Amino acid sequence: MVRNVFRLRGLIGVLGLLVLFPSPCWAANQVPIGYLDSADTTKISGWTVDPDNRSASLQVEVLVDGVVKTTVTANQPRGDLVAAGIAPNPEHGYSVSTAGLNLATGSHTVTAQAIDGQTGERQLLTGAKTLTISSSNQVPIGYLDSATPQSISGWTVDPDNRSASLQVEVLVDGVVKTTVPANQPRGDLVAAGIAPNPEHGYSVSTAGLNLAASTYTVTAQAIDGQTGERQLLTGSKTLVVPTGSLPTTPVVTDDGVWTASATTLHATWTSSDSVTGIVEYQYQITRDSSTGTVVIPWVSTSTATSVTRTGLSLSHGVRYYFGVKAKNGAGLWSAIGSSDGIVVDANAPVITGISPADGAAFTEGDLVTISVAASDLDGDSPEYQFLVDGAVARAWSSSATFTWDTVGKIKSHTVTVQVRDGLGRQAEAQRRVFGYRQPPPLPARKIE
Ligand SMILES: [Ca+2]
Ligand SMILES: [Ca+2]
Ligand SMILES: [Ca+2]
Ligand SMILES: [Ca+2]
Image (tube, rainbow, N blue to C red):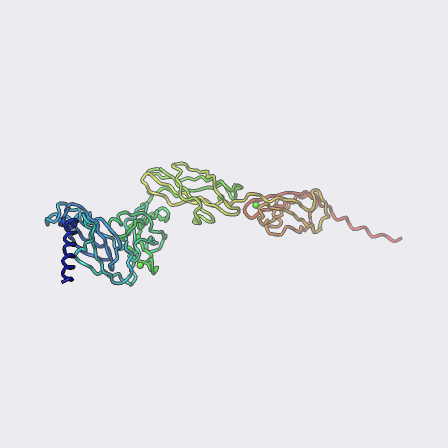
């Protein structure tokens, strides 16, 4: 009896609370409807609609193995929903790039849940999917899009890591001509769901390949991001470099063998195009060789045929080269012409002493030792050469002394000493010396 009284009081209490605080769920919210249509290694997609507001685009969470991986707006066109009378407008589709989820290899369960437009509650959409990420390496995909006398271009992506920029080798008639990174923007790949980021395009200047006028087959191969193997990209191209239609290869002249400046380089050049004329030149500066490390990348000079490039940081003893290419009125670039190089050498060697002294005399037939002392502020190793009366008597060597055999040398002679520092700078000095005949032997004395 006592127990029944307590039960009755409890029931009255609950009913009283329901009267005082009617639950908002009595407003009869309807949860979103929709589907996870498909999930493969490229994309995950489906649709959702909230029956309380069938024109609104809901938020959708995509889950992999029960964990929310990303949230997207279901606002992509799905005309079929309008046709089926499910929604008045088509903006209810959703799509997620699988690559962007960076899933581990193996099998995964993919689900999607819509966020209710009124209450924010999550509603699982119909259709869980199983998605398998292959554990074996996948080779790069991509294309050689075009090959013209100006440029060769395309794109590549490694399905194992779709955000990475791969290296691409461009081949002409089957021979690798250059290797470039495929890191130029290709927004179309993102739009197509092929990669999460656009840095997958490659482009090579045909001018840089120095192709003679002829017909070539161009191909490209990507280097796999995991294994390094080469994968031929789709689309072999025929490249025609027309005869006589390119500007002549520029003839480039620098300021000689050496320069004392560590900040400025100068060059001039000539090129011509008898058909359409030259509309632009570009130059670059490299060090050590015409194909060495690029110090200044390509710069346009418009139609100027010389450049004085200031503000450089040049190194003593290093040789620098100008490369120049010309563009004609048809937009075609010439091959690259190069200067023969110029070395930075701040100081010429200085001769500090010569023996014998100017005006010295010797006796004809003596062995006369000629020696020279020199220095170079740059610390360059000097070499020496000796001339007598303008003719080389001892060619360049690292020895600073020369032994002159004076047999037959009488009267006045000019001895020239030359010193060079190995980088092209040179100094010389001269001495006049005099040879006297051996006195005749004294006549034998008559003994009387
Ligand atoms: Ca709702
Ligand atoms: Ca791969
Ligand atoms: Ca030169
Ligand atoms: Ca020097």
